[in-house]
Length: 59
Image 1: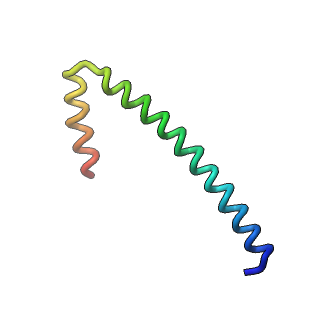
Image 2: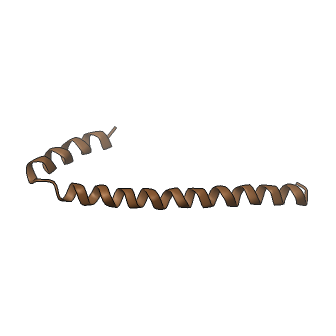
Image 3: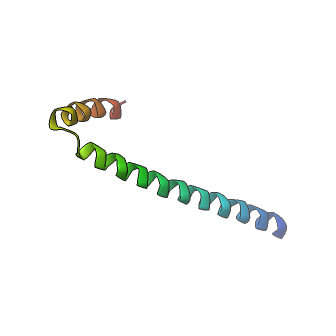
């Protein structure tokens, strides 16, 4: 691999890594919001949600 190819590859890798980290932070914020909403559900709805969620998570 030439120096120019190494430079091009490392640039592309760095850009992609920055994008992934950015999306990861968005996903964490979104999941925190979902967790807060779920924790505030009325108990009967929350229990049904948890039951169905565990079934979907097992797939």
